[in-house]
Length: 282
Length: 286
Image 1 (cartoon, rainbow over the protein chains, first blue to last red):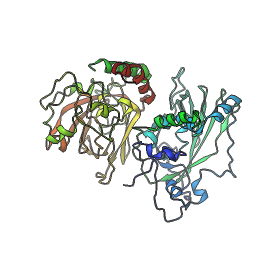
Image 2: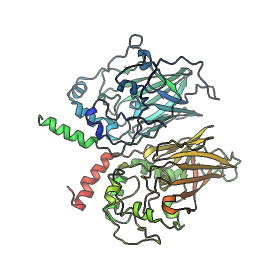
Image 3: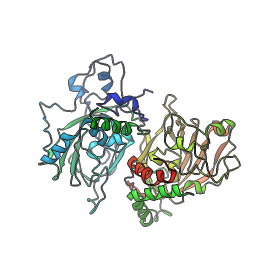
Image 4: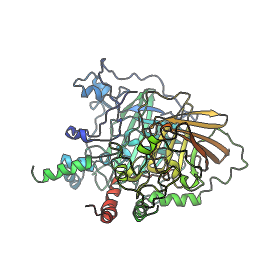
């Protein structure tokens, strides 16, 4: 069984040795010898007995159907550009979020160390919605009658979304996965989520949110080998206007998720020391 | 929970865990399990969310533990081990903290867990069989698929996969949940798990850890449409030689045919607060 290499300290390799996370993390194929191309469409998407698209499978956030970071770490890039990405920015450009001035200022003032310290996954916390899908880690979806189960390799997180049959709670508690309702619009599953815990981020770069954040995710499976995941974020306290992601591709893999626990986490302590040194000008 | 530290921890956790409080209410109010006694049912349809009808597992286990091996006495006892490189928080502290009660069972195992320690503290993984300590409050959900079964636990939102139609993966890397395979023995689902990493508790009332040879066999059986029984057998050749530890049954009722799990996240920051506000002042740590 191959082992996977943790990515818990993305962008901060100097502290990598301190990352004691008991994690296989996302897949690494060391010593890649052949070029990796994007997957073909693979034929029509399967459907569940009730006639809806079946999203079941392990999915990677690229177009290659496998983990790609190993190739990059090996100092070469045998991966086709269109296999590595989730969308072509020339075809479906993705705007940057339009932050209110105070929010933009807060993010801009964050040092790299402060950003790491605030990042949910560095604190062994779930990335929540939609952060759990702003990731390089694979996910597994399981379509069952009336629900979609999302399994995330990172931190072993999971989310069960009930489809139909319920409305938002009247006074929901803030949750990492929020309060979600879902319905089908044709072959697209639409998930509407409110009441998200403010400790989660929308990306890996400090995009925090308020208690008023509202996320609408749209998932479809245009062919066997691809999912399309697109989401809209409204946050009247942080953004000046709603933000819409590009339609992001996830590609089907025959891999399996591995166990990933965040334990014995020394990152916080070390980051605090670095922050202290930085504040003293060292 | 027999000392002030642990009681304090419990208070903190209770204060921090809205999910627990909500779950208690849910447990009391649910009516999902009332209709099942005389209903025809698919004996292999375990799908749904299940909640324990008994108290914590350890309270039910009146079956004596097999005698410990000499190796286990040296390596697995909570009060004497030094699990360097394993759990640097809970186990490291427990190696230097002995039970004050001095009460021991026939094996010489402390009857109490080391002071202030219990499974899952400081957000350590729980795994199985420890998860079944808490299913009275925290349900789990079965999702049955043709080639696998997912078992999702509300407590700390852990999950595992039980593979059907295959043997154990001999190359599996040791893990908290191990490598689980399942098969049907008549209408009983038999789940066989090996490949543990040996870092987990067996139960909150067992005064030693499992070894990496721990082997768990679970037998799930529907007794009617909305009730299920679970028999568990523990094997651990390093701890008990060829003796098995078994002889008790857990009972569950169906809480929902779908998902009734609530979000239960263990936040390490709460433990830092606990250390700063409660533990450190008591122990004199700074």
